[in-house]
Image (cartoon, rainbow, N blue to C red; front, side, top):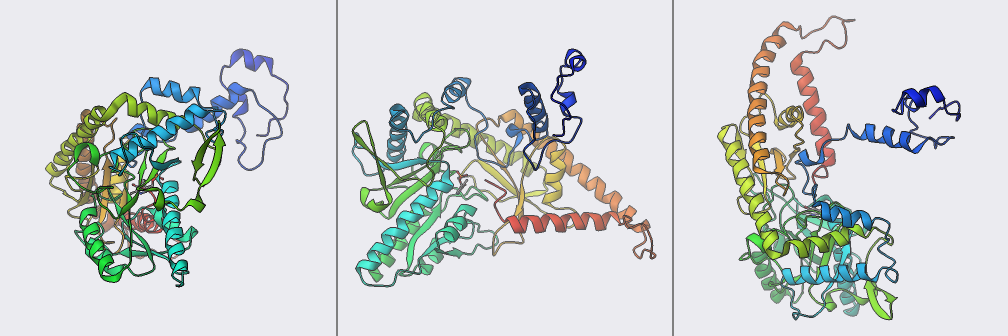
Length: 497
Ligand SMILES: *Cc1c(COP(=O)(O)O)cnc(C)c1O
């Protein structure tokens, strides 16, 4: 910031409690400013800029937790200066992490005794967890191929085209080919039969998703396990399964205990889950657990000696905060099985309320399933005049942040809106959202009736030299749509998390 003097202007500090003298000039954006400013001015300036961010509670695009109990906020603030990696100094935090790993492994039915410690690790999120799980599969496959004297330079991974973008990241960063099972209209998850068909001797694992990011639908891991077992028997391979339960890992055990998707299935060797999604912790925590010790190659583990005990670690990062781990443990003991079940039931119920409300407008098709992650994904029955991107844009006026996106191949012609139901999205908010969607639809219909009349009076062939901004409303709308579409295509699914 170009502040000409560091001398305090007494008059100003007397008459103004606002950081006004520091906000008269443009804020520093490229170079570190030469001079310091008072702490309250810095606070004011940043706080004001942040007012223009969306309201996290109204961000219906994300699964990530936006509300926690004040008691937990207190614990997190108290630990904000603790570096997780200093295990010697903070042995209790390390112990809390280990307890969380055990609880998650038991929740996912890992074949371990009641008091046996599980194999797993806390991460920054499911993305890091997936990198680690993927690395373990890759290394295990390579070791086996080397031992057999076979080439080990072309590993691949089989997934559905609906995978979250972090799998593409894993594939690119760690040089594994991603073989995607294409979707089709009306079928938006990986087809287990097609996936197993794509498996070859270079497949390090098949990754199934428990709770597709796009529609919340659970993939059929049980059928995948069965088909893959048969294929393994025929071929003599031992292709394993990883379950990406980022969003569904804290849903299924509580409200769909009968669905077999976890370590109950023998080929499932590792599972990741996002602590910061339905694990109910603020952004910054994920988990990966392995079935057995043998599923995590020893050479990937680093051993830290703390208080005379061996603490194995396997992460991509070194330093990180401790608060999220502590918060996860808080949620586990505070809520228990009963509490999580209750919250997930509530979310599912609110999803049903919202779904019914959206259906009652008569203008949308529901794309999400009743069983799955509590969300409502819906598409327009008629997109000839306006599309889901217009609906999303219009909902912004009411403060709602609802993402719109097109489906991955081969269902790209389907564009949907998606509302994620989190714990803090109450029934009354669901009802209000329905009311606002109704208003938006009335408005869009109205606007488009008017637009077609306006479009008539704007001459299509503008004389040379005419004002360049005289586009017809229709042209402008189409341009915006093309822009949006290009943006969405480019981003693919990375805008939703
Ligand atoms: C959110 C999500 C991820 C990425 O998880 P982060 O915790 O945000 O890193 C991966 N896979 C699926 C299915 C997801 O929903």
